[in-house]
Length: 391
Ligand SMILES: *Cc1c(COP(=O)(O)O)cnc(C)c1O
Image (cartoon, rainbow, N blue to C red; front, side):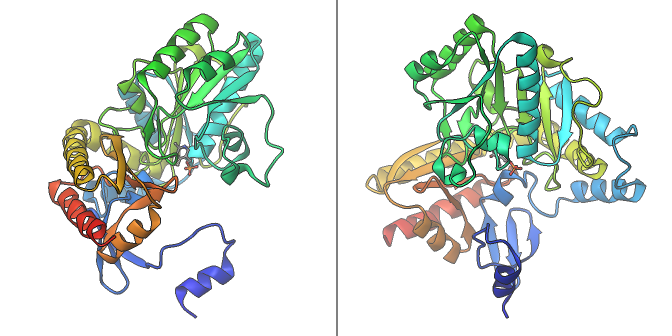
């Protein structure tokens, strides 16, 4: 039996695996069992910010593993505290709760919202159409697409959907009993779609009018990915809660809920918790990830490489206007919306040893390690050109 057959007979069939067995990673490259090197423009789905084989990250993980791997949240653990302080320093938020995943951070954020709402007489949580917030019931309750919900209803009550970038829909949905609005300022799985400046402005003025909480899902767009610490910093909105995860643990499972003054004292001892949340090895990795991004020049690389990538993709669009409908993105969170299914392009790129991702049917998504250089972007563009020329 091949590895693929064994996977198929022993797993729930939830993942469409690529027919690649990875044996090692090196910088922006993945190496397969047959010795091929693949340029990775997906980065473990926006997780591997520092690429593969990052020595400082590996050392931090090894050192913390040698000290202790787990002791439980009954104890004070320095790596957690240092990482929480670091997150507060860069984010401007004042409270942190660590989780093991993105969806778990969203669940905790929803609990904070519900608790805050119960104390303030507000009971409805608004979400945006086409959103992605995770796979657990609270997160699913925020998501309107049948693709994710079908067969899992009834979901939670007390949720309503606002049409993405539709100002009248937002105006109609917000009321004095709105507890919160949850949104990705730049939708990720939904196709790399930023909210419009008008939508952001409306959100701000409605918050002033009704006093609801704004919850930013920064799981994909946060921690430098867009060239700023948070995606929402590109809009003049200041959320009350942000959730982060994907890159935070350098590939180890780690997420966080960050809260500001409005919710700083909402949770009391015993109201929320996690056995593994804030694992000290993952936190030791997180300290390195944030330091590399914020202090060691990666943030600048993201802006510079993001601009280069967008410019090259836009030139490609001018060359193939019948194939590329729109190019959009911020920093190294970039999408090229095609006029056809993205999948065949993804497969053709893989044959050229470049891994890209397709999302929302027609969008080619680029969420590479944040350490990539011009050569990686230029190689991706050259390969795309060859693929488009052959279509
Ligand atoms: C990936 C993602 C999630 C879910 O994170 P998990 O760690 O897979 O639970 C939630 N929101 C956004 C925007 C994401 O990109």
